[in-house]
Length: 91
Figure 1 (cartoon, rainbow, N blue to C red):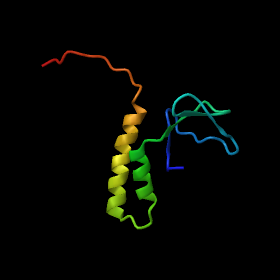
Figure 2: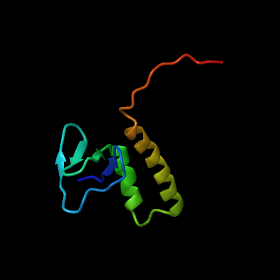
Figure 3: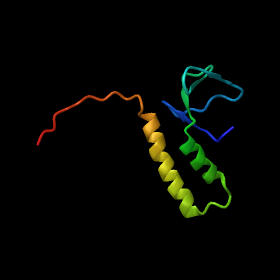
């Protein structure tokens, strides 16, 4: 199985010990017994960067760069379903 990142879609609580994750539609998983929805990020680019982060030969500078890139990708995933509306620019 390729590396995955699990991103809480709201809240920062971890699932309680012994709770299993059940599959739901799409890439989202819900922790039973908790109101925290977890989103599993299975994008190949994210998996590649996580693999590099886990490599013991990755330098500190490369590690920091990878974390910065992952933060950008995770921010995109976290805001994927945020509604937006068009507004006229006021100058």
